[in-house]
View (cartoon, one colour):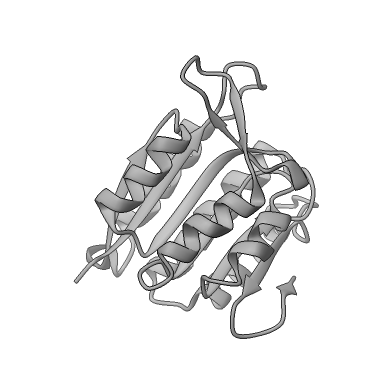
Length: 192
């Protein structure tokens, strides 16, 4: 059975514009050309509000949840409110949500600035969680995400795909290769 990758995108109108559409397009293109493309199904939700987050996970039963958007460090990640403005969702709320889906979600990717705090909390429940230790540029976030899914769609483990994605930043001459951090439930935190 194919694993579902659920991409959740939020770029609230009161935050600076990110190229989330390009990130998702490039991930999709990589998955379509991958050797094991039939092993994955890509689902997307845009302008995600807290209710959409919950419903998307319930509806799609993903193995991998990928959030792309803005992070606020200890304050949480930025989803949208009903008006399209930023609504920070706390670390505790996110960890609590993923605790409920611990039997089905294998990996969470928080491709947002300062999201390592949330990654660490979510990793108490989910085997592999990737977050960002500091601000990350659009270019680095996109390069990292595409390479991560290239690795996963080639049949590699989450840890290998993470290392491959960090190396992709180095190969591209992007100095942010130490920004992504992998937190694993069964072992100590890693970074490149």
